[in-house]
Length: 140
Length: 68
Image (spheres, rainbow over the protein chains, first blue to last red):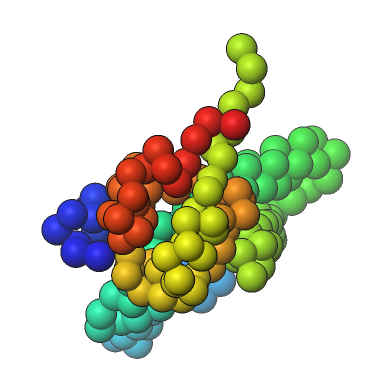
């Protein structure tokens, strides 16, 4: 398959960029919530830099067929991209559902953001991951 | 409106051509599981992939897929 005739290549670049910002925002939010207290020190900048690098690696690995250096087209073909998109939809709705549950629960129980946010992200990620595995196994 | 789905004669045509799923997948540039899911009606291929499959098997798209 020639990449020049593959419209997915442009979409993949957009997804990689978006994934980077999403992952970076998530990791930074977790770092702010849990990690630093007081003024910024040199070690904090190093840590944030490492987090951004990790976000870039995760974004690349999750959107380019798990290859940092080159695209493995048979592992990132049309079916896999469709399965990934379907799994992302499941993840999105699971995340929204978890958010709604947390919002409703907050009327009855005092919830801390630092406790709830990881659970909401976990719900979305777990749903997406499980859905992707289910779809991939269907092809075997 | 009746729900229509995509019927496939891909397996039949591929077998006639003497190709395995892996060989066809190699020609088209996709994974074997993609060919498998298309043949079993699990995955509906894009127009681009349908055209590539037809080209690889030297057939028309209509010979491979139909409305069922």
